[in-house]
Image (cartoon, rainbow, N blue to C red):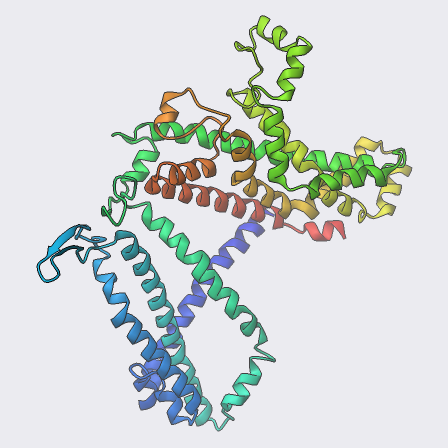
Length: 486
């Protein structure tokens, strides 16, 4: 099985590079073997279509080429030449003798230079792909003409994009959306990590520039003023992984057990109980979390009850607390445990619904056969129910783990304005014991404008999530698990 999984991964990677090689090979063949009009398409994109009397396509490609040229001259050239330095002219007011007023000079804006340069690179990359694909298309028309085959008219091409190529039509807008709203922000995040973009270098009043891997060295324990970032990173990363594991496994197992309990024939009024749990899902999560935060605050109702019944005094007498209240959400240790427990209360009902749907689809004959063979309820759960649940909900389980790594709502809403760290090393890097990497990233950007370190942390989060996802999915799909359960 391991060899089969390894072989499939290798074949997928080799297939990917083979496809890229085939694309470049097709372009090279078109350049070398194409006729005069195909070769002319290297300069004028519509030339090959004119030769084959596809004038509308020729006009479209010519307009597209002109648009790329105008974009380059009138927009990209204002920013890309400054990409190497990210600007050298600071913003300042200069006295203009013509108007007798102080006016802003023609200053550089580092962030605009970076953003619009990245946008220009993406546009140029897409233009190169279209240019190469266009060469291959006109060469294909040349071959079809030489073989006497029918060359589609523009109207026939449009019809093909509604019929046999309809998948391309459907994917065009989503792909453009991914490029504009996902790819470019990710590239911007990655590039900012290699700059000194922070509160001291804030455009337009100040410029920021490239610093190489200095920020990564700071995060992973480098020296200098940010030496505590290395210490904070280890602490925050450790809690992030611990939180993600327990937040995922507790709600997952809790949801399954609750679904089994409600589906049991011994449970009375199961519809009533299921409805009550579903109602908790209907309440917006941020409302629930804010209410719970107030309940467990240092002066909240829970602390009042604990003080009245003598629990607070007892815990203080045995040395578990040193305050006149129980620091449910304001002290390390206590806050970590309470966050996980509160998340169980918030997340179990949702997992219960998923588990209920899966449990209803377990073949009843398998369960009955197991009972006839003398299997105990726990054996049935361990040998049949749980493996089947893992097989069906495995991808969702992986998604939940990744989601919990980035679970901003629970941590932020429960601890904001409640938890204050007393660890000076953490405070120096604007972190807290209860922070996840994503909440630390948020605080660095929104409160301290430390975009450079936030970008580095963002890259680390992306790497952790992607590596875990690839490994987990590769483990789940290896072998013939589907055949086992059919």
